[in-house]
Image (cartoon, rainbow, N blue to C red; front, top):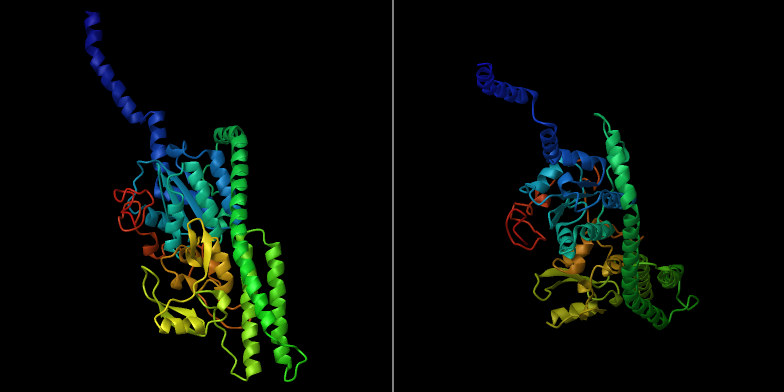
Length: 461
């Protein structure tokens, strides 16, 4: 009888146990799972990005190790640029991800997201124009996560503007601190991955140095041609400071031209990378304008206004007017031209375009690749070129604020582009252009380097 009673009480005991479990709440494992899901919210990602430039979702830790994330974070911080990297699992919700992330973070910058095996990025236009972002994203498609994020970081830091947010230099906000277990685990991961990370850094640095040397060697040919052409102009000048009619203003123009020639040679001899070429072409541009002033004084003509060089070939000297020109397959635009090219265009003939050697043969300099950005930036100041070169490789790269300095090489002639508003790294909250962060990851209206042309990851370009 007692056995029967115990058997009848069993359902009641099971029910009581079940109620106890429900009241007590989910098991520790369930709570941990819920914590992971909460940690992947946009607000949590944004909070992490305000403390540092790299966030790796726990569910995507297999794509980028803690050591790899730390290496990228240090590189970004050392460059003092507002670049944010986010690594998420393939199933993460993607619709409006960029605009939501930018709103939650509230910091102007370049935001790049690796989602599963797909990659995309968006930026405030004051940091990097849309075309430049698109080209950078395209350049790293098909790479594994570690290589892709590393390559994107190297290339983006070389072209983007702005500065790192001040919050990166502060400690994380309070709220519980970091557990000892977390510190021990992190230390163990760092030690285990230290050797691999060091080898990766050395390999990437060696590869970057090799790319820089190759680009400089190719540029050196072009710049040497420029320096030689300017030296020949000086030889043909037939001016002597003591000649009859020479005054102090003429002698000053002549001295500036000679100084520019020497500076160009010296700066090219000291160049260690493509970015150093900008100072060389700046000197050549300044020297050619000095010769234009000297020629006007000697001939009794009004002094010319300070204008950019001839768009088609800076060796033609300062431009004298703007002329309509339509590149093959492009839209019409106004470009600064020398007198000879202005006549050619007016007669329906082709201008004399500066071509350089590339892996695909001789090409106009604006289609020769981003290494020619500093070369052209020294001549044109960068500010006017993005509008002139819309749709070209060089135009998209030179649209970056790093090439957008005002066109004022020292003669008080203002000009150039104005990238007003918030600069990269400043806190602007939700005050940003939504067009900069539209498309991709679900909007279907932007570009997506994934190459599938649709789906949640974007609608293609």
